[in-house]
Image 1 (cartoon, rainbow, N blue to C red):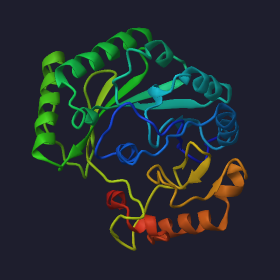
Image 2 (tube, helix red, strand yellow):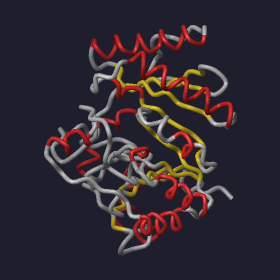
Image 3 (cartoon, rainbow, N blue to C red):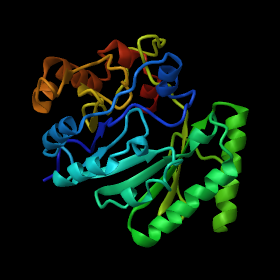
Length: 292
């Protein structure tokens, strides 16, 4: 039977080994804020309650999942509850975590290659590292796919230059010709080979209390195809509310079912379906422009 949600975003940590200007982790580091890691007992509780609602989870809202020392324990728990895992990573730790990433609960690996831009990472050595990893991994698990994410279009001349450099490196390595740019209002993914896809998209901003209002009207897939759970157990309606401005409840105190069936959750979802943005954070979310 088809389950209610396509995926649930679960933040196992909000810490990262890199600092990217477009990510709130960078702000947390600048402000000397403490970072969180979801405790295993709480993660087990999360998995037990989301497994009837979805087949897939992704260890992502903020943070780098490969930065978690005991990542294998989280993967074991996901597997225990029959949940497939999507890993979203900046790719810098794939060699160190290679054996862990072979875990059979993992069904997809997203690599955010955009993260090379603000961290002064040599793109040639980074590219070699990523492709050697994918080639080695594919020989062991040939059915798993990789998404290489270039989510920084329409941002700056520097970004465009690095995008072009990265695409040239892919073309030269695989002897193919990829488009330099595709219409971002259409299909945003290009097949590179049998197991690698390149995703193009614009850079976006995470909404928070200080963001400028965008609109009162709009639609979103939050609470329809997905929702999120932060490292402290707070349930949020989508994958962008990293600061829990729309805290629907906490799994430490309430069940997921009770939280998702609360009056506030229902009002948000009803508003999305009618094209009305109920919450202030939603009205400030630039990402809302992507949905018709």
